[in-house]
Image 1 (spheres, rainbow, N blue to C red):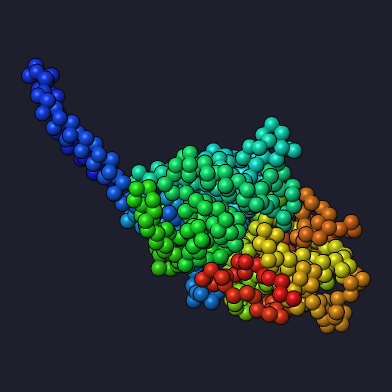
Image 2 (image 1 turned 90 degrees about the vertical axis):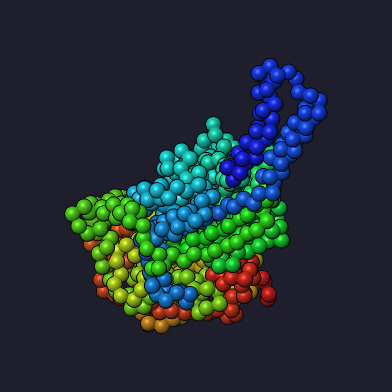
Length: 603
């Protein structure tokens, strides 16, 4: 590109150089006709120099990784679209990225959030283990996910306030109630500009639209999240009409459902790279404004590639490739060595060392590659919406964990929040690190007493937050997982009427019995000492009984599950939720996990 422009300018200089040098040598002024010819040649060359770049076709490649959730190494893939082999692994992903860069030199790599949470290595280093590996990837732009704030404001700014990975977030502010001197100030720049191959690329960011409900407001104290995308019109106008970018890319952790709506509502965005919902788009969604919207699954198992061609500052062609990071991709030795280095202190061997949990103060004294139990069936929560036990409703992994909480707490009902993250565990040995992929945020497990009406309200709230036809009313995640409960779910019913025929397991009779709205039940779920009146999202004014160790010591949630596995295998009863009607069919041409337009109230 630059060489071609240079050659045009050289030709123009050659055309006028001789007359100019002759005049300087004292040959006298040029004759009028010669001057006219020189000016004509000069004007034609100048016009050619201006027109050539406009006719030239320029290429730009955008790569997307997102929702890594602490996964450094491959994990099993048990959903119907795989064969059970292991997928993911950052060393494999880097190989694919490097290969694309080698054949597509004008490439930008983007990370769309939820990166530094989701594993033991992430938890006990407060994200540093992931940062130490991904710093080698040369990431060009990054939109943080809600879980990237899980270690608090100070840690977030320490990691990303220095421009690491080109972080952008137009909707996350310092909370003026805590930091009045920074009122209206965003934690990260709202946008950045990149020049690639003569193309001016605007990179706009939307981070998470919500705090981290599972822990409570204490964990993101000092941070304020805006949740409706109201910042978009102003920044789109600025980037298009003042900055005059050729390509506008939105990195957004608002989730595929909302990001498609942004693409429909706001003209001027060329590409939206979406994260949060863990949806996959083998075929990109194209909105009525022409915006291309894609999302790349979870755990580093997928990589998105968009190849653009531009002419005269306009996109004239778009191609999308959806890469699977599987065993056909060889790991890059240097990245594999870096991963080995950061994991060394967590694995069995001479370099293992204890680690302190930043949330509950417990100390990790067991290598995470230790086998702690057995799975009789595959454990995961990832099925598509048209499959048996769709992930938005239920999964074997959440059923198993809820069973462990209920058993170890001696409760009537066990619950785990409806997280979209997690991992897949094949039938066979369960390692401690598998449990940390499920429980990576340092909770304790506690028991409280609640009445039957509270149970009903809790179930309805979870269903409404997952299937509301107003996607901006979603609470982030899927239906909570339960043990000791069975119920029917009519996703098409009105709010407050979706959950029906609720039955509770009676430990004395060994039978499921109808829920008594006025009855008293014990309930076990996540608990944090920093948020002492909340258990599993249920507020209480009564006694809270955390599950303790044999000597009265504090137990991390993973240790509670390890204790359960000492006397049980992971073989949870499925189909605790009976769907009265199938979930809505996919609407954008790809299989869906959570219905991307919510569920309409049909009756």
